[in-house]
Image: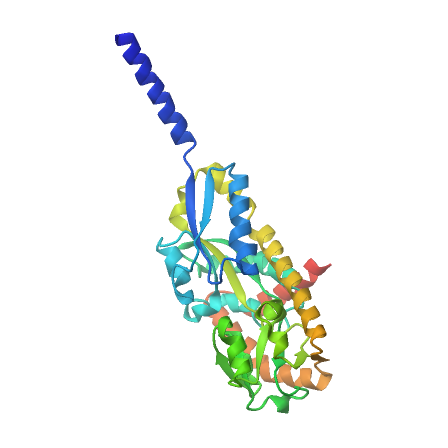
Length: 339
């Protein structure tokens, strides 16, 4: 009887060891946008599948069906452990971020993939040490493609045409650009853009091309003025709760790091560009008038927005960063990635 009991206890101990060895860590993930949105699919869904693959099933990502919090609360929700993983836009909490504006200035580039990869590299080299993301684990940073000017009623060919026009803009640098060129920026969520245009509340939008088709804006937009390098951009970050990451095994931490950083930034940037092509096809099919900004318009635009960069250089200096040098290096990196 004693031998039988000993054997039974030994078997239970081995079973417990196997169970512990195969225990699965489940990370909760929340997206600002619906789960079927291309950006949610290209960030959280794709990354979650990669995490499960590279950790051989030891770590799984569970995408929540709805946002856990309102968009501006995303970063704190991850930091405080309400959710484990999310992506967010730095412009949602502008008082907390200064250096991330480097990715948002006019004229940074025409390729989301190139800008995203360059941004990730510059962050690792220069910006991370300032600690603006203290309290969360940064998986990767990225940007969408260049924001352009789209109008529902009349074309914009000169800087004077912009005077008093109302444009839906995101916050941050895009709002500063609108003010600098004499337009009225109306910061409202992406989900309200169609109604704002359709109801005549705004004359147009400052917007990247990737989401136009999914929002069916080609049905309302009649004119687009394209600015080389863009009117503005937006800075995004994918983050994870620091404590949850630190509790993972070293093996799984290294596996997750390997699919983050530049690899993640490149894939997401490439996804934005695929969406841009679909939107351009939709605009063309709807016979939207597309015009490149003239040299005179570009000259006036650069003159009026120059102070935005100059102000940022001063803010960066207060954080120990040579802003002018790093911004020049960032744009050189964008060109390098393109080559």
